Figure 1 (cartoon, rainbow, N blue to C red):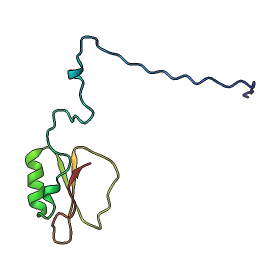
Figure 2 (figure 1 turned 180 degrees about the horizontal axis):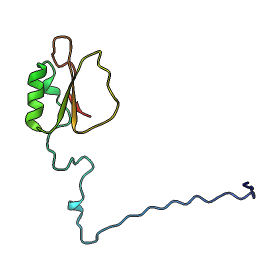
Figure 3 (figure 1 turned 180 degrees about the vertical axis):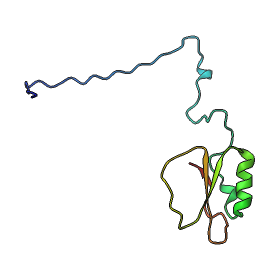
Figure 4 (figure 1 turned 45 degrees about the vertical axis):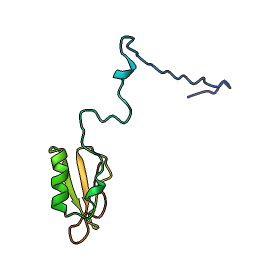
Length: 102
């Protein structure tokens, strides 16, 4: 049984930051730095191309990436994965939206 004593509990918040004094600010990665991957995240120039052309262009940037062809009736999961590119195509197999990672 918990008994209320009328006192408010104090919130404790702790923030720990470990700084290396010998590290310069130039070595700290920027927020939008994607590390060793230099391939783009979105390919707007592929809209209007055939699926095969679009998938080849994306694979040429990053051969280890997984490509999914998505039609209007495809059921998708909502997970976000940087090793996957979904290419949305219309009924003729033409890219309808800009393919992007995720």
